[in-house]
Image (cartoon, rainbow, N blue to C red; front, side):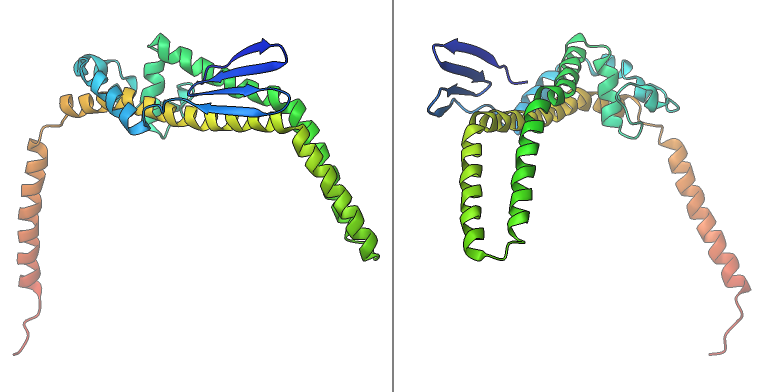
Length: 239
């Protein structure tokens, strides 16, 4: 999650985002892009490399969803019961404090974001609703000259409003951008945590091939017997 620190210097506000610095004052907004972060693919590779150095047997033994084929996955908090990736990750998160702490932080952010933005969204929605209503009313005017004058007046007012909320717009755009990054990296984390577990499961729980081989032989014999009896009972054709 991006770290945000607010610092007030005279009439300026400086906000430090993870990966960028934004300086806001009364006249302009400056965005200074810092060094690019690792790509998601590179991060996934690094996380998987680190996780593979751990003991796969120990990891697999702690993966409850893989131990019991009859487990009710829906009983695990946050699990939908049809997503084994999610099931294994949730199971691991309950056992690793750092993962559980991150999940708590994400839940706190998601639950609190609506409350934090509700006042501005109500303010913005009412303003936009007014402009929609005003433009709709103009469409019923018969005097085209007067209608054009009023439309220009409304457009000018709308532009002033957009300038008034410019700071809000910039901040909300960064919130949305960071939310997308959080979701992407959260997915990377889930795969990095769970992939070694499923690989360990594959390695340590491969079934005995004997029963499958016996079934294949039985199928071969059954096919031959079926063909034999079919040919025996088919009417002879005159050639």
